Length: 131
Image (cartoon, rainbow, N blue to C red; front, side, top):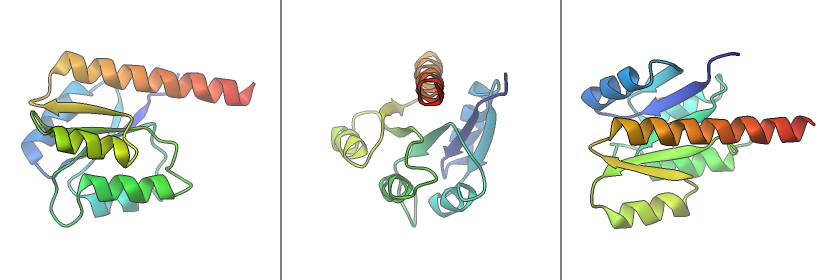
């Protein structure tokens, strides 16, 4: 079975490196800004997006809103990454189309569990649509 592809978008290189290590069992496309993420999604098919909320130029909310308006990426689940106690960020994340949220600092077991659940759900949805 082919490896699932995850797009990770975070402007902090330390955070990106941590996520890349944690997601070593997947094909990961790493981007350090929202504009590059939007551009790559016109060329690449991904199974899941991990998206930082706080980024310069275009934040995660704007990126998610644009993605959900596009045909090629509207059904890709988005999990937001945000600061530990930011409840307003969490509410807004769900409002713009996120399917889940992971608070920082990232707990590796939580991250992998949420990623696995979303990828399994995507697989089941695709199987149902193809049957």
